[in-house]
Length: 395
Image (cartoon, rainbow, N blue to C red):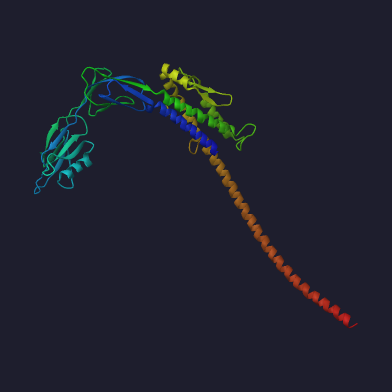
């Protein structure tokens, strides 16, 4: 059971590896102007040609106070203003460091406060500088008793861009924008106003090929583990229905078929031998991926949606699902039988111990009786000997 469980757990991990290889981690991108746009890919990305025209990369609004020297004789009530909204600030004291720390602690998702010295170390002039966390004309400000303390250094502006020359301008308060599922761009700088940045997204064949190689290896290991339990020299599970159930799961994986342009594993470069083992040819996948990448994605699908991955995930869950899977249930049943046998052994041992104690007590009683009889015999024997001696002497 342990060997089977290890083999099928490894096979389950291999299927998850195929899912990963089909996800965002396996995709790569090329960008016509990487100084203008950065690309990040994740699950959901699809191969294709994309473009973005960065009309404005956006600007973060900034401001700075004058020399920070609050009147110590006056009570101060500090507030933060961001985008016209006011927020109460609760600093430990009236120092620039405490006010900046309170802003970052309470409202760090909206603005970042830093304390800078704009003069020499010998004659410092400490000031609080604010930068909005989002793009746009948010005019970050600190108010003391309702009076503004900040002078605007930079007027913020939203980012603006056009995707795939749609003509539709999109405003964004962040330089990180999602132009499609799994395709996230970082706007680095404003473009020339006419030339879009081209992004080509492709999936790496090598990542999927490596995952399929691992799948073939772990599949064959599971086949070998099942084969140990039947044949001319069957293992201890010979005749157990678990062996047949596991064999059916493996057979279903190897012979899975679909109605798409790729109908089975054989089309991807797999061959099922007479010994039940799968052999995998990576070159077949490489050629097919160039011709029919969309067909490959459709065949595999997703672990929770459709295709081979959904079938394989469900099949192996039926084997390994905690409590209800084929192997956990069989192991639990075996453990229950072992517990019952151990309980019977304990009961039998208790009876043997009781019988031993009884026989030991009876033997002790018998020994005592024998000792008494031996004493009586010795007395009688002495008497007879005395009688015989007397009879001889007086004749």
